[in-house]
Structures are given as structure tokens and as C-alpha cells.
Image (cartoon, rainbow, N blue to C red; front, side, top):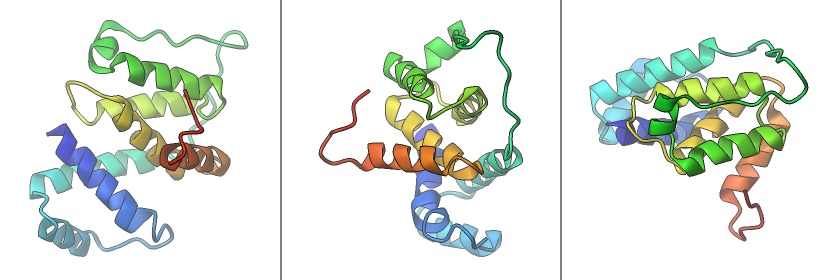
Length: 158
């Protein structure tokens, strides 16, 4: 079920949000279009709810940690659901300055909202891209992430 919702979110992002970020398509028309593309009404509703939660998290305040470089410790449930590559990539993005603490936690929130038993590296990349796209002031980080994701020469490594 996770793949269908994430697939739908990626489809929305690639075909509607990314192409026309300033326009807000009518949900009913968009829903009909998504059903024609093969998505179920349940998947569409879950994706819309996921996006509503993402939109509600716009303009998050900066989290203030104790010390200059706080370390994020993943709990047992997070370790069970996020594979090693996914956890490592999140930490890499934070160390590289692409994600700050607030965006890291938002990425984790949106990943776990997918209700997937297992979350893999590609899932993380897409959710990071969507979170950064949604956050004002994150344009440079979004551009970096977009370049990294679609770099066909493999120059970016983590």
C-alpha cells in the first residue's frame, strides 16, 4: 500500500506540483484525473491527507538543540522501518547542511505517515525533495537535492 501512495505522491509532484507550483488544481478535477491514471479513491484520499499535513508544516520554526552538533538517535521502531541506507542518507543530508533539525524531523514525520513497514533510500530521497520544495527559504537545498537525485553521471555520492 505504501508504494501506491508514494507512487501517487511522486506522480502528483512530477505532473502537477513541480510543473505548475503556483497553481492549485481543483481537488475534484485532480481526483478524477488521478483515478483515470489508475489510482484508487482510497490512495488519492490518503495522498491528499499526506499533502495537507505537509502544507500544515510550512514555515516550521528552527529547533534549538543543546550544543552545536546534536546527534539524532533513531529508536527501535525507526530502525526497524528505516533501512540502514535510509538512516545514513538522512544523517548525511543533515551533516551536509541540506537538512536542518526541523526539516529532518519533518522528513521523518512524512516518511512514517506513509504507513510503510519498510522505508528505503529512494523513498527518503523523494520525501526529502517534497519537504524541501514545500519549505520557504529552502530553495538552494531543494536545488542541491534535485541535482543529486537526477545526476546521471553519478558525481554526487553519499
